[in-house]
Length: 193
Image 1 (cartoon, rainbow, N blue to C red):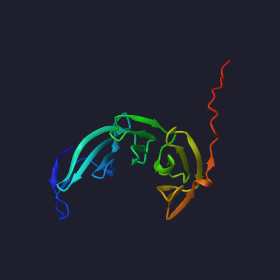
Image 2 (spheres, rainbow, N blue to C red):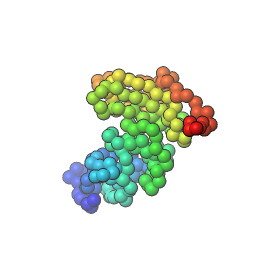
Image 3 (cartoon, rainbow, N blue to C red):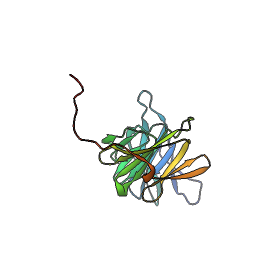
Image 4 (cartoon, rainbow, N blue to C red):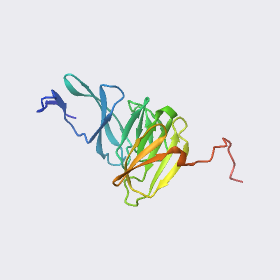
């Protein structure tokens, strides 16, 4: 990563320069995460940086551990955790992988309900997308919904509604129309003789 340079815009004093392809809100009001879209050879992980800004401009705080951002290249911070497009939940400093969901795609947190939704298959040409909600604490799937549409963006819309952009339409998918996953019995069953 390179240093700081003067910005030509009058509203900007200094700008950070480096191999950054996307930025996402950080874990505090004065920070954001920057990622490279090109993945590392052999691992598929993406480089992640934490940047800070103040009245003097933007500076590199630290290079974080590489993360699995999946096809979407997305990174979302919510309530003390980072969620990746590759299905991981990691600590804000990326030092700890807290868990891996059985999905990937566009992560959409619903922190008031401890629910994380993933929109999977969003960037394929099959026009078939699966929306799955997960219990944030246990990583267990709660419900899912299949949509015959290529989805290219998703966001939380209200209390328990997922908004998705499908072509030129924005569709609102309430949790109530999703098919619930069977409850876990919590018991182990032997399948071997």
